[in-house]
Image (tube, rainbow, N blue to C red):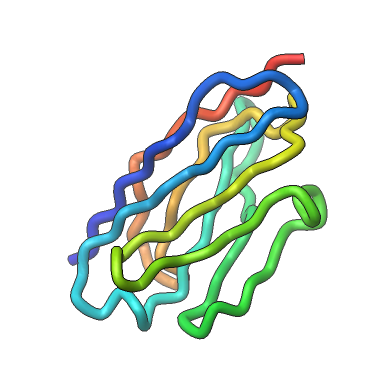
Amino acid sequence: QVQLVESGGGLVQSGGSLRLTCAASGSIFSRYFMDWYRQAPGKQRELVAAITSGGSTNYADSVKGRFTISRDNAKNTVYLQMNSLKPEDTAVYYCHRTGTNYWGQGTQVTVSS
């Protein structure tokens, strides 16, 4: 059983920054591939960024150059640093263990114009 708890969402103006945090349970977190998804109202959930156990990363085209995914295995934590935020980034952001049905509860990010 893996539990994922997100934090760090909120309301920010366009051009601002937020850092999302996902705290994970599990003694072998360092082996997990992890990712962040988001879901805007009326839209499908979409992959935002992913990170392998070795630290390789991948991003959706819409966030490349603005978002950075990282991890701290000592803290069982994965982060999503979001810079130059745009109103279209407004969504609920979810932490997810890749290839499983383990999801966090989500954290709301709202970017005002």
